[in-house]
Length: 283
Image (cartoon, rainbow, N blue to C red; front, side, top):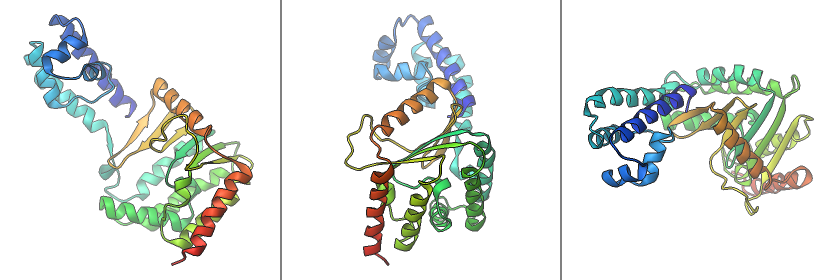
């Protein structure tokens, strides 16, 4: 979530905790029992770890005899929901605007930590691969088709690979080498691009083999920009993580995933094997 959304959620949780204590529920367990909820739900709501629904607010206020606060708290819940960055809202005029917004973030970043289990990271994409990704997004989200302009903005990021002293620590799952984006010819070109990027002095590209022993579940993709921002993309929204304690969790996750990665000749071997697969399956 954005910093503002997270802070609002934590403030709401503190109010709910106060209502519980004022009503004589000495622990979250006792309130959970009264509401027929799992104890963990009460804890997550009070600590800002979970969004409260409007029905949650009504049930909580009824149980703690705070019904007069229901309209205000529901308004707060709706405000928190509005702070989520919905993809449809971001993309309502096309993808170029969203791509342009990312450029200042990339310009300011000195150390990138990227994890993508099943797709090539945007800055490493060829024009053809990126175009297919945007075409899929156009179809899925039904926003205006500005693929050519969006691709141009995405490729603009690549200049930062060669400028300044930025460090790129990128991890891809082996599945990213095989997820067929755009057909065999597009994939062969994309895999060649990955191989060439591995020789850049400030790029560290690791591949997590599909059979690798893992120290943590591989989860979803995320992009870390120094220690100040993590972007997480889901089907419905882009989450901007700025809370230091949450950023630290992503840093730990990246470190654990990296333990499963292979580099250098071994990684190039996996890429080469994937390329041979698409050589045999040309369309």
